[in-house]
Image 1 (tube, rainbow, N blue to C red):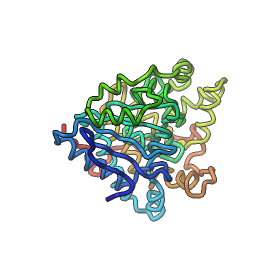
Image 2 (cartoon, helix red, strand yellow):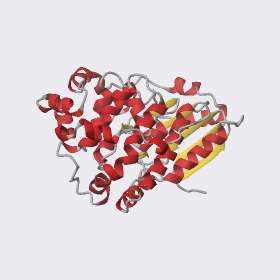
Image 3 (cartoon, rainbow, N blue to C red):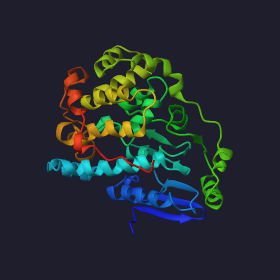
Length: 347
């Protein structure tokens, strides 16, 4: 039994609890495989009416993937390690998205990166006052992945570009406004879980939900749409350079801090996906970058600066947003050929 994740059936519910609170419930490779195995089983079981996914109480539902092993593999030039991990994780993400029964996720605390892939593809995504959801991958030399680009592409206006490039954190109101969550239920989660376990009826979620809090992103929408309307990272950087006000200041700081190649590719991925992408298209585009990120991108250096040495002084391959060329982006996002992940589910 894997102590990092508790998988069981209770009443009419299949239950998944991420159980690494000291590590902010970060996902390991083994946890991803365990989630997939459970979904494969419960899809066919008549006694499982609903799936509940939560995290051990603490600061996070899931603050991302366990990337230290990725760093070690990258340092040793074992590029296939990350490729195999992401192929398995992305297949699990697709299965969650397409799961034929209701999936209720309880997104307390931090839900970031890999946590979005487990928590934000469900049918009923619940947040409360301490919820903080983000896609901060550009800060470590990656791009928003695990299907996060799908959510960003579907966000209103240019919020997807803003959230993906800056890694800005969303509270409960913003998460609902941007399409990363559905229901605001500030308290009573234990009682709701008990009801779902007993009845298997997700009508209880709608009955318990309260009106969503204010969404600061909605108030800033016009400004964000203007600043992030460019076709490339360079276009956006030029718009942001002289922008005043809180949105401009925050965007300028993020664009000067995050990996230029990652931000440029994140913008391109969102524009390739358009307004109504599929999960397969999103994961496929993401894989083109992530499968190359350790060898040809800034991923190893980003982990070093943020997680290993914690000096917060990454030495990116590019000096700034304006130094990333179209050719650089094209090289990272060209088709993978036989390396492309198999994302087949049960459709």
